[in-house]
Length: 347
Image (cartoon, rainbow, N blue to C red; front, side, top):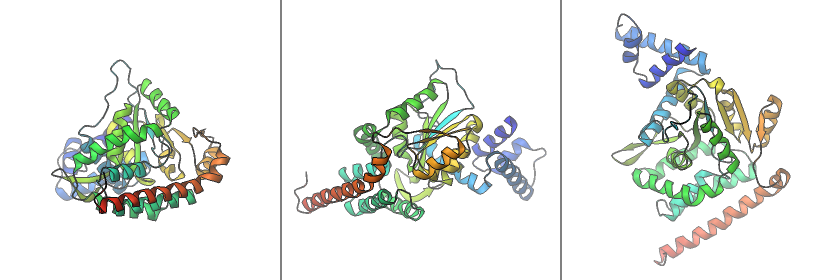
């Protein structure tokens, strides 16, 4: 198994460059056609056996991880503590929304970007509407997620990468930390103290996850990566949105690159949509789980932890209404601000 992890690490590091990969692994060098066929077959077999996914999905994960590394400017945002012996084959993967922080990180980001005039009210409105739908239904909608991806890419197209990164750091400090679950952070700290890597894995833009990881001292973050060119966003995606199976693909790629043993890893999430990621590790944990994940976790005898500050029965009966009311109040506030801006009185 260790030889297979080493092979996958080399293939992943080559970013799918089969010629370089096979020249290092196979004697004698092959012609182009044979090399492509042999390389793809070898990598595909290893990926299928190790992670249970096909080579194309794995390649998307490699792109997502590579994009995250490039965005951060390094593979690990926080280096390991040299005083702590490292468990190099183990890691913990944490979802963000309702696992690490209460509510939606994307909504907090959108609100913060609106206040900084990075985005307009018309660009913020779709995110608010999707949050209302999520609060009422209690589940994420795949169509909303796909549509949200396209809207987000269109919003940031042509805008400054440096400005977004700076905004993310400010939003984490001013808004997100106060909404974080102290118990979840304590869990992450325990993994770090055991010499294990700690990664955030979220569908939200990778910059917000990386700002959180840097502030909290975590190893790094994987998230949805928007392509950059000459300091501006192009409006195109790198890899895929990290939602549902996308998280599994990215974690598989990260495990290959870091030569992690997933049977020794732990994953934490609140959502049944993250089942692909939870099921690929040795220790899945449901934190603040939705109804479907709680049912599944109980059936599988998984660890379940609830850090929410209100009783679940009260939450289930009141939060949808509170979510709609809160979103409507926010909408009125932002609308008034836009009117004042239009008349030149916004300050």
